[in-house]
Length: 141
Image (tube, rainbow, N blue to C red; front, side, top):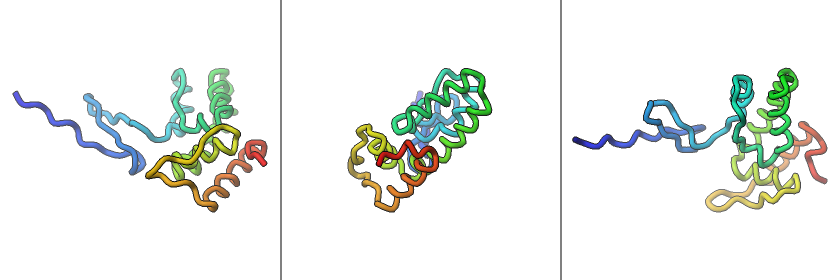
């Protein structure tokens, strides 16, 4: 009897490892759930683990509450806002982006550990512009 070799790794967003489960379905080990959160909550999911939850916790909790209370139109509008934030903060800037937003909001994000590098001033400004367009109160002066 020979052992079955482990499944070949694939990637999520070209960066994060992903494995195939024993059923053959892809099992993600990272990446954004922002695009699927609304659909999952609509069909009965009890929650989600979002990277933006560290940076924009109030908005993520509000999204959950809106879906739970049946305010689907408001929830979808907020989800679209969070999708924009997710694209710029998480997808484009990953951990450094999340940590920068945390710092801007008064949390402790800090600088990313090596081999990751901190954001350039241009990327910081892009994120600040995004935060200001979402809700000016999110940007600390």
